[in-house]
Length: 581
Figure 1 (cartoon, one colour):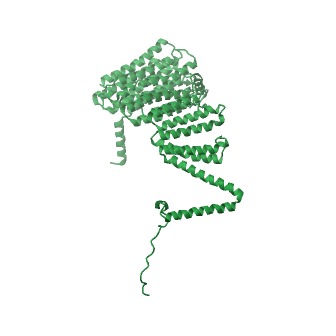
Figure 2 (spheres, one colour):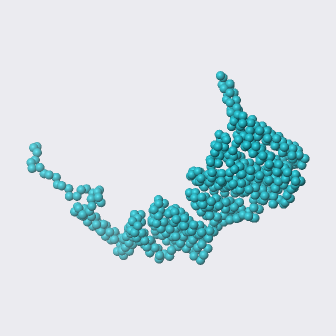
Figure 3 (tube, one colour):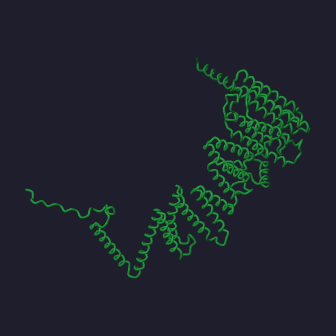
């Protein structure tokens, strides 16, 4: 067989296996409806005729799906056909948007809405029963709620059936994603049941692909639905506009922005969290908790045009900025995860509260972050401290100390003791590190113990080089440094800490050196540098000679003088007779 013949066979096999012609047919039909919308005036379109075309095609697809199940059980084609049926339901609901823009009859609007919804329900139930597919009510109820939301929304949004001002319409557009999120949360019982809810469903399809593929399509349709509603019912008027050049075009200037997606994504995260907890999937749970803060990116003012900016800042002035509202959603999410005993959820909750200290209802970006609220920070420090004590976590307790020291600095900065704000907050942090280092036993506590010990030589050297750095009176420098080295020595002796004992010994050696150096300089000013230098070298030689003598007398442990030659070497034996020459 030639290479070209082999390629032709592979192509045919691909089309036979995946059979994309149902999807192609549905796409062409939707395009024909779209083309009709572009050519005819919406007011002259026969509403029932347009919906009837989509309904008849949907019935045809549903019938094909049932036949494929009953006669051949071609499950891959059945899956494609049934998903297309669901897509046609969404198409029918979306087709009603422009019809409701121009419809003036309340009774006609209600009839159109009820017919569309009942048609979707009846067809769904018929397909399930005739094809002997079983969809648990834990899934079926949310499914019908999705369909109801899709069909009711254009009727509620209709400016002819429900006259209202432009601002109210914009608020309703913003509420639609919130309603979608509410419907998504009704799937929590289904998530908790897991694979048990789809046992013996009459198909070879396994959980989670069945039936979560259906809801993935519904959620994706809801996102597109939200944007389409903004196009159709937004303040720029109907979706179709007439530019000066003639013809028709779509008006893309809408109030819709990425922050419309925040409730929907948050609801999806709740489902993922529930699935991870109920299935014992620790990786999924932790990944969901870690990814949750990315929700704040969607709350940013990402959008273009005056219409978008006007409504974004209107929302900010009326109920608070989307960033601030998103922070509240995150706090609720992490609080819920904490109640569900998800590992490390409390850190997310407390971190969200920390962000709340700088985010206000008027925050719309990084440049509009406010000064930290010290009282909010104090509350946060107390929560971290309680959590650290209960969990015996050095890191959590250190975060509490860190926040408390920063809060102290902020409070003192605006008081009469502003000149001591850095000094007091730094020592509070230092004392906290010392306490945590010795009260806890985890690796982070040992690290804090080491760091707090190493800070003393740095502080002492800083005071020597720049005595005014810590705003201490000059007369306090020596007592302060001496007292700190003494305190570290006592702590090291009490807790058997080699780091603290080493630092205290270093302080003693430095004090002895400084005492000799001070005495040397004082005497040298009176008797001269030459005399004092000679006397110092004399004392040094005397001490060195004494050291050598003690070594030779074996009064010094050998391990301390290993680099010296052996003491008291044996004399070389002298032979009794000299060798012959």
